[in-house]
Image (cartoon, rainbow, N blue to C red; front, top):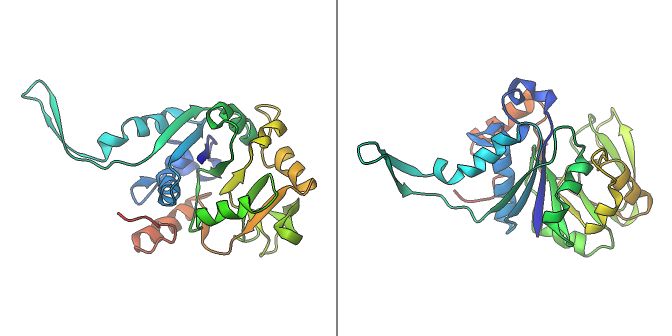
Amino acid sequence: MKVVLLAGGFGTRISEESHLRPKPMIEIGGQPILWHILKEYSHYGYNDFIICCGYKAEIIKNYFANYYLLHSDVTFDFRNENSMEIHTNVAEPWRVTVVDTGLNTMTGGRLKRVQKYIGNETFMLTYGDGVCDININELEKFHKSSSHEATITAVQPGGKFGALDIRENNTVHGFAEKRKEDGGWINGGYMVLEPSIFDKISGDETVLEREPLEGLAKDGKLGAYQYQGFWQCMDTLRDKQMLEELWASGKAPWKCWED
């Protein structure tokens, strides 16, 4: 199953870092948060990635173009016709398709632009700025056992996000405006979507979280995998510092892979 990552936004809330690089390339423990997300999915056997870029897309492309070299021990011999010898290397089982989906394209429009790389099959979708310790295999099983056209991972981070109205049979019935009280469920990404979602996206201006997902909720076709484990997005510099501290402690909850 393919995994699509939305990595094209401007990251204005963390402009201290994002003025130099796209938010998914901001580092936690010396590696971009995008790398952490790919490692999560890869641990559970998902290795075919499609990255929807926009702002500073060339930085993401260059990262993967040079990934093999950057993660290897190398000797450069300038005395011998500038030869290069790779001593050890780290190989990932990944296939990564990096697509420039436009500078100002909305989330739904970005997804529509990569439809040809997904094909007519169920796929995963998440944001390029959040980590979680969810068992992604269990999420896929949950989606396949339901009749929903899309399943979102519902998390409870506090009161600064828009809340979901979840009722019987883990079905989302609507999206509320941002609420001040804690405890509301919100869309944490880590979604599973059927290809029928593309029929609900009209173009670049479509916000995925609006008409497409709200329409599915209205029709009772949007599922919620309610998850109470660790989830954290990197919205602000404070969020980044918190994730850095967790990584430095050696107890980062999202690190499910072996070194």
